[in-house]
Image (cartoon, rainbow, N blue to C red; front, side, top):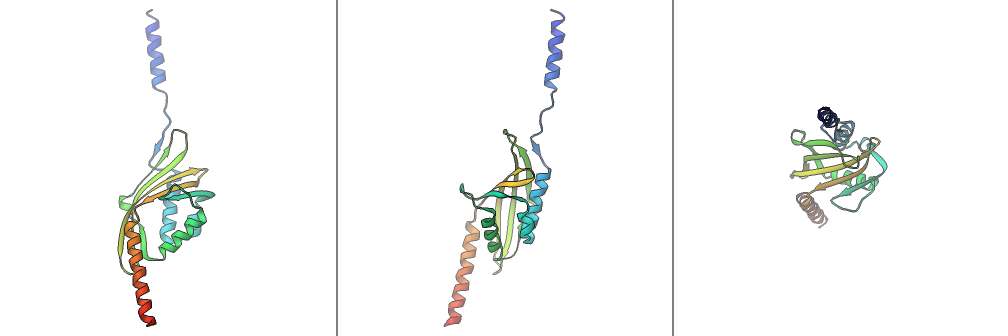
Length: 170
């Protein structure tokens, strides 16, 4: 019985000292890839932006229904044409990589998107990205933001343009 107690203690020590798999990362190749994609977006380098995605990537923009990479590229390039400047506030953003319980690789990004429309209207919108990676490429991207302020400002700008066009025609 005296020999059993040290054996139990030894087994407990060995099993409690097993290395647990790290599941959260402040930096990784995937976080660097997402950061590079954000920089490409901010500079309007759409080829470089697109290069971070798998050809079959599914993109969800405030929706449970995915759009294709080409459709998202078209939407982004069209939207950014309405801005004289845009980007993310890097001083207050947060990014992390997580290996979930199924060992899927996800990168989460929280940031403040700012922009100035061509008519001078300034916007600041919180954005959250949930991005899934496989073999270094983005296979799914979920984008969440409240676009109310941006859509209202863009509609007002369009109405202003339409009014000016109508006046010029008369």
